[in-house]
View 1: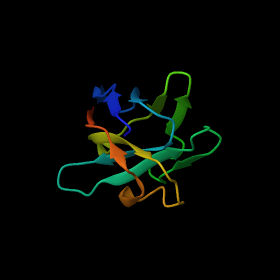
View 2: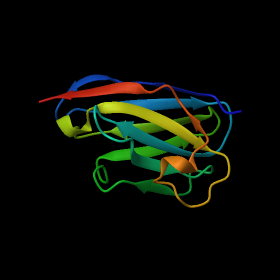
View 3: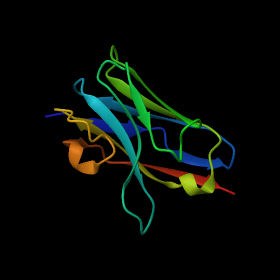
Length: 121
């Protein structure tokens, strides 16, 4: 069982930055997803258990950075140049047995409770 707790969401103006954190009870392949009202949950970024490889959705590439501190069992999502379209509930997710489908929710076994990010124009 992997427990995940997100933190760091909030309200920010367009162009601003936020850093989300996800404290995990184990070291696994990790992803960040987001879900806006009325929309499906979508992939944002993912990172291997070692931190040696990262993956991003095209919509956030160059603006968001995923990283991890395995000594603290924490995964981060640094978000810069935020846009109103980034407004969503952000979820971190853990994948015990990574099979390559990092952009799909079905790949992940555990989910956090979500943290709200609101970007005002």
